[in-house]
Image (cartoon, rainbow, N blue to C red; front, side):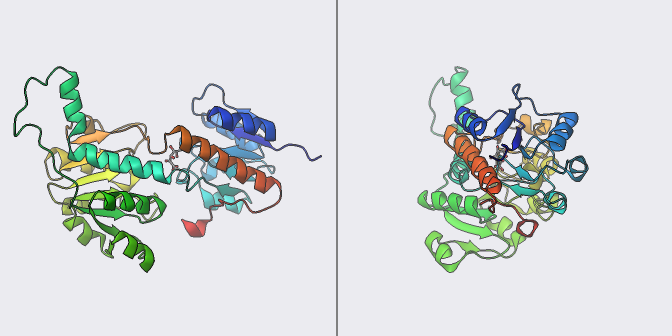
Amino acid sequence: PARKPKVIVTRRLPDPVETRMRELFDTQLNLNDEPLDRAGLIAAVSSADVIVPTITDRIDAELLSHAGEQLKLIANFGAGVDHIDVAAANARGIAVTNTPGVLTEDTADLTLALMMTVSRRIVEGANVAQAGGFTGWAPTWMMGRRISGKRLGIIGMGRIGQAVARRAKAFGMQIHYHNRKPVSPRIAEDLEATYWESLDQMLARMDIISVNCPHTPATYHLLSARRLKLMQPHAILVNTARGEIIDEGALADQLAKGEIGGAGLDVFEFEPAINPKLLKLPNAVLLPHLGSATVEARTEMGEKVIINIKTWMDGHKPPDRVLTSML
Ligand code: 8YV
């Protein structure tokens, strides 16, 4: 029988995933669960047949110059591949796969949760109550804003954007979106979604903006200081995609000045660092990248990784191959 491929996994994964991987492959786990340093990553790419990285690993062209002939697959644990130089990998005959689909609903749930948390001041209220500050109810105390009836502008109408739209529609919101191209007429009709070719025009008219596009060279700082200024002073910005899509410093300044109403952020430009200005703002709700952090999603992401490796081993095209033409 053919030898089992050597698979290096850079972080700890849910138990059932690790167990299955050990059964199927010659699996090397990073038992202490700290991100590998550069030397560790170099050692991994120079000895493994397959590496399974996560968002905390930077797989750039220089790192790949250390890849051995045997490295054939980078089976990313996660949907976003902006930490991987896919072109450089492909140029060396190394395929890249990701784990789309299984984290869509959970990321969309968290997006709605952030919208409501910011709009209804849930963290502020919880903090007051927990600190013993609920000393009496008052008619005008801690008023937020309703989300029903409001205009939601979704940037990026892929799987996650559409899942956000379905939920928001059920909450009575009006769905608007900006995307490279309009979605199919059937989907647009189902969601009663209005397409904006001009992001600038959409930004100026929305009550809530949700970022749901991938981070690519084309979307880096898509929400620049200039574009953020187009948002209305009561508007809320939610980001469960990638921090790099927003100029975080400009956002912090505009939130502090009251030029933007509030923000719900699950991702940050210099993760895991968060702009210190954001930490002090009552109108910013910050989460530590929890979009796909459910037992179900993380397990299914691991299962996808396994399927991608297995199909590749069996000589077939892995189902979730990422091609540069898709980026
Ligand atoms: C993960 C994500 O937390 O899938 C993604 O793109 O951002 C999250 O699901 C992370 O990327 C895992 O590597």
